Length: 358
Image (tube, rainbow, N blue to C red):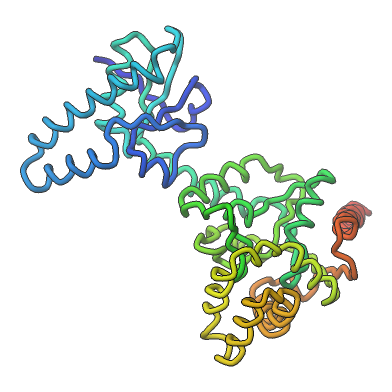
């Protein structure tokens, strides 16, 4: 039976995108907006794969065919039961092979104009990587720098509220980037999922306008910033937030207050610094954590860990750091952060005016 085939350029042409892969594959990453209607669940996929290796391809297909038919029948009686005749779905599996092909055949026999994605998820994945490589160097990046506690992420949020284009990599990565940066209520995405979301964000940016991003290391927690993006950021102009230590400490205590809710996790994160700090220092920090003395603990982390690390990394990694405009502030309150955002936009406006002048 004829089955329609579509390309990744036609994703928006369909009423619904269906991922026919297993739930585990779907959880690792999927096309944005897709729903998961697996033709084999995780356990079934393992069983069929084992049968293929230990017995034969025929034995695996015989069992797999029965399981696929059962699962498609269940989807037809559940999620698909109320779909109208004019409904047009796009289906995909790993490489656009048997799993999505079988599903498409059944849907077309019912009477729907179902299509299979050519090349499957693998083709979409290639598109994501290629587009990040194409888009990232073409954007006008402005890198917001500053040591830990400078409220860089909050400044990005203020810039966005004031109409600027921003890319919040730490939000996409669900991690604040530092050794204490894991979020209590959000697990990090997989690398593939991070890159898929990043691709979506990059596509929406206007290359004719500046894009503000926070200075990051190559890794944010457990995910890595794609090479084309990190290289573009490191070549971009920088804006340095020069907040007083008192302002930074006050902000850190406020922004990381949730660390006091899980002392065991806080101490485990401190232990990860064992190769960088002395045993006596770590013991003292564990004691401060146990007693919940966060201001004193964060103050020592600023002086002995974060600031020395910042001085080494920014000067060496970001070529525009030495010539960065420096914005001094003694307040990282909400009002102080909004004021920083306004000053950054004023700098951009003045830079644009100077460039346009004859």
